[in-house]
Image 1 (tube, rainbow, N blue to C red):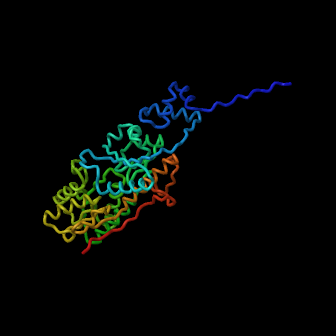
Image 2: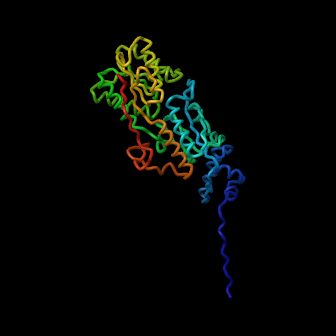
Image 3: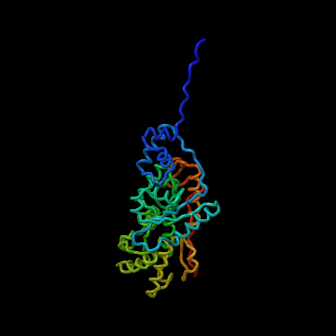
Length: 362
């Protein structure tokens, strides 16, 4: 009788297999695969790469309480973490977290510090499961590491190119073009542009819309009527001061503006304050138009012309997307987009935003 040939049982890959292959402890492997902050980026990457080669799949689990963090980039001279825009987005994130029994945390840091640090480690120390980013720029290089390690995040209105797949955007160019056309239709041919968003994707879009509207009406762009952070020396503390200084600067130009377009309500309030302090009337002497339509606009006197954007909804939808990514561990490369990167497909809930021009009361 022929002897039965013994079949070798295939050994399942485990953290012990990975540890033996890399000559590290199983505990180190476990912490690296779970993005624990005490493990360096280099070691995490090496262990994850070896785990993939060996076909190891980390068991997914739902944490008892999911913590979504709002990460806010702050300018060097910024004196407050909050603004009407940040408040509105924060309200949206908070509402989603409250409805879904999640924790909400807030982390503010300067751009260079965020780029230099191991952000996943920093957030890991705070038990953060996913993040919503505000005021991220094209120079925000930390998104490369977030993508490589599939960290769940979403940006609101701006971010680096590699983050556009996970960015909720409005139609910045279209809305700005419409706002500029509104001022031109009122008879303005010299419009001051108070640009607090230079360096942000949404700022680039709004500047493009402004220039396109002028060109469509046969009006030449006057660079002297554009006031940005570069003109202020980046020493402005907040949007109110930016609007005030912007009006002072633009009214000293050889060709003075008859209207001002502000990138936020904060900036518009500062501009109006300076105009009124100089004895001018708004809108009789100067028109002022802004974006956002924060809850403070209802108290503006005189009333303010605004492009109304649902910033609270942006925050809510961003938190919802981060929550979905935490649950599904989905790859950032799988998102379907149309038009160009950053625009969500119509089948998604995070669609491009439309807004409405609200004229001040007589």
